[in-house]
Image (cartoon, rainbow, N blue to C red; front, side, top):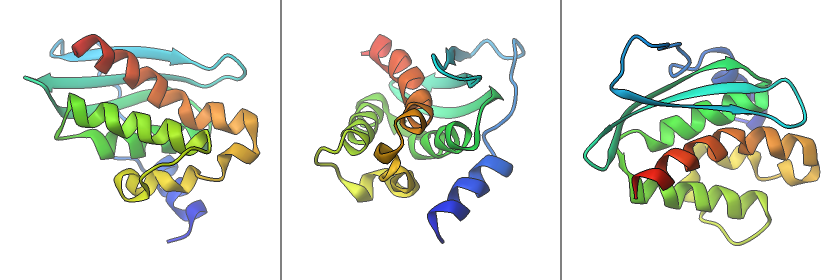
Length: 139
């Protein structure tokens, strides 16, 4: 599948896009907003011990931010916090043109050329920035 198809698949029909609101207090919530556009996402993470067992998101965001969030959550469910931190660090390395592990990122590698468009880089990184705040709190 081509990068554009992967992005559109996660943008149009993400299984993780659902608004939990205040209905389930077993989820941690982080709200993140872009400094440069309308993107605003609420990420909900359910932790058991040191593992993400469920996750979802809601909000208004462009195709890049929405699909990036969907792919991120897909990559992090059933992972330990230490593994999630490595995924985030690996993504940061990729978008900052440093050495990274492509296999570890799975579909997130569709954003490897995002560095060519600075404003889109911020969109792709937005959900990682939010999830990083949660996992940094947990360790």
